[in-house]
Amino acid sequence: MRTIGLLAVAVLLLSACGGAKPHPSPTRGAVSAYITRVDNIEFEMQKPLNSIAVATSSYAQGRPAVKTAAAFATAEITLLDLYSRLILVTPPPPARKLHELVLRLVHRQAALAGDLHDLVSFNPAFVKTLQPLVAANAAARRALRSSKKRSLVAQSVHAFRVSIDDVSRHLHSLHPPAVERPLFDAQVARLAALSASLTQLEDAIRANDPTAIARFQHAVSVASVSSDTRANQLAEREAVLTYNERVASVKTLAQQTMQERDHLQLTLR
Image 1 (tube, rainbow, N blue to C red):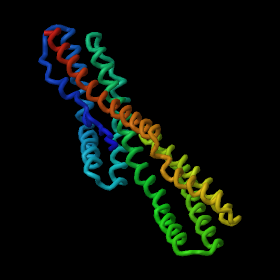
Image 2: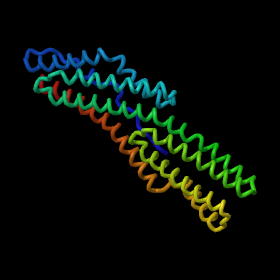
Image 3: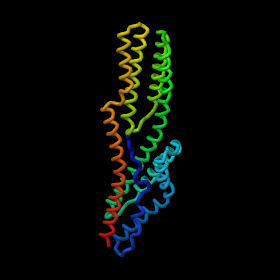
Image 4: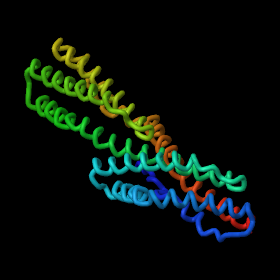
């Protein structure tokens, strides 16, 4: 089963950086002012940031892809805007590490929101593009079972191959995200092999060559399941694991940000 992770930290955790009590030390005051400024930027954007959590929940619950994709697109824009505003903030020396972590966290969240937008947009389009093959395959099977005339059988094989080639052309207009690339490439390769085998089978049927017919029927059967090879399965698994590691890295960065905040508050008491 393909288990793809979601945006693990949907709302920036900078609010946890707030609450630093004023201190007569100039250093403490500078850090407190920095944290307050960052918190104010986040507060201004709290509503659009909360929409990221809503989009993530909607995707997990199987809500309409169009709305969910739009929400993730908005989330990416919001996070990039937040990043562009935060990068203009100059932290005091003691808060430089915290600021770097904050920027890395927001940037990675934006990248994952973009990944989720691409994923949510791609999957329905991928399924829709492949859908005509179900009917084309069924029609070809019915014709092969019911027809005894060589010319009609050849026509059925030809029609199925034309459907495959048409779907293949449409697939090349899609842009799969990295996590879906192995699955997509395997499907494209399977259809190419299937089209080639069907062309050879059609020629063998028209030539009334039983040996060639048997050989290319076998080739069609092999091509039909070629995307289920062990190598393809491993590639798909690796892509999912890599993606999930990126999702997990957001949680790790958030934890590191909170730890640095706590360390900063303790050392500046």
